[in-house]
Length: 123
Image (spheres, rainbow, N blue to C red):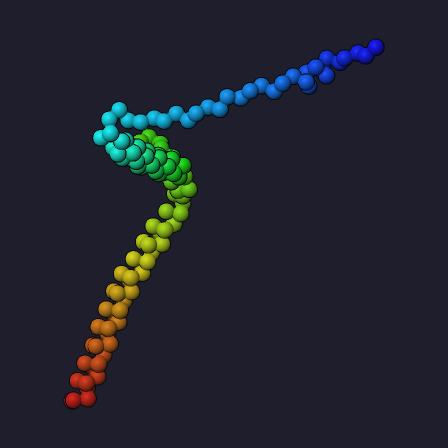
């Protein structure tokens, strides 16, 4: 008595026939449109690339700046650093003014001393 296993029958089934699909050929309605369709696709791709570049630029600007009350501030803005810079510029300007006034007074004094010295030599 020979017994047949169900898996044995499954393996003996003939393989399914695969139908080879033929490639579909798509053509324009009229021959005059065939060249223009590729130009339109190229133009659309160019517009799409430009829009993508514009969006990347906007995202980059939004990442670096925060929008608060309608103004864009750089996140790392330091008021104390600005105050120190303004104070150093003020003291630098004050030094220039005092230096120029002191140099003028010193130069005038030296000139008066020289004139006085030459007048005493002449007499």
